[in-house]
Image 1 (cartoon, rainbow, N blue to C red):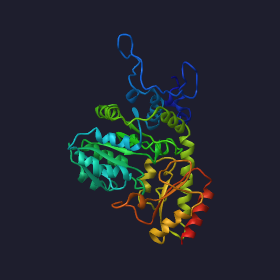
Image 2 (image 1 turned 90 degrees about the horizontal axis):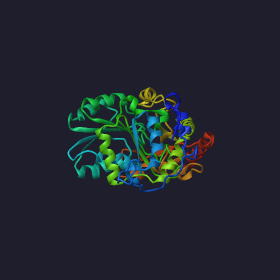
Image 3 (image 1 turned 90 degrees about the vertical axis):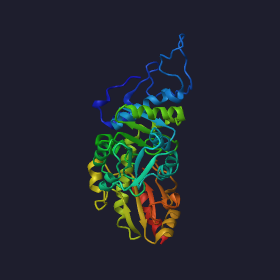
Length: 385
């Protein structure tokens, strides 16, 4: 594959052209689909091609991994079968007895995995308020804490982590800082620039952007021993993406910037409108000036504050559920980051122990006309009352 040096190009150009790689043999602009699971040995029994078996050496991964690493400013990237596969691979690269810290507000499935499987397996898991730096400092166990995991903006309350400050605390204690940047995307934030060592994406969401595949990804600041261990976990456990899914993901990433920019503009307009709606008790969105993490978000996010927001509905849980029942354009569904706007009563999904208020609706702004989205929520809120 060939392409121009992306260092002189804007990230939107790099994404749209997928690094500008051209197939040398066919001169194809769109990449070929590499579907083989196995590769031919040389006559002397060597693998000089560098490929042995697709679980570890799939050429279908090369271009999307290189593109994501370039967009995040990292040294390397890895694709996984899901966001959960990517996230758990980080923790599975540790040893029983190691200490890890995670935030109170985070992706619920990973939180449950940490407090269930990971603890049973032998990791010492501590959940803290990652917005309180003093609390994080007290939780650190120098030499024992191996991973500080954070998520910003954090789903679904959209807490903002001060990445530079948390990175300093983590590194002072000898830990790696890993950041779930799914909702920010490299369009809005590049955590490695603020000191992160690893960046995780549920690529199912904005990176792909079309609600038609499950995928995950990790990006590393450097190709070190920890990264090599994570690669071994992926190869041995087999949490890899299929070739067709990798091809689809690359296609999705080509439109990442215009999709995210449109969705972010819609989210900002929605947040400002809903803040004045008499049937809404509170809007949670980092783009609002009175949001607790607004100033930090403005410092480490460029081009907007994300396409996710949440509202707390006046009238409580039943009013929130009824609001979701009355939407016509918005879709009642789990997930986020697609072209279509989604609404979900999150407490129903997370169940007991969730920090999510019962009156909260999580909104994933899509790329529809924002006036249609506003009108639909207004009528649904009114109908629920």
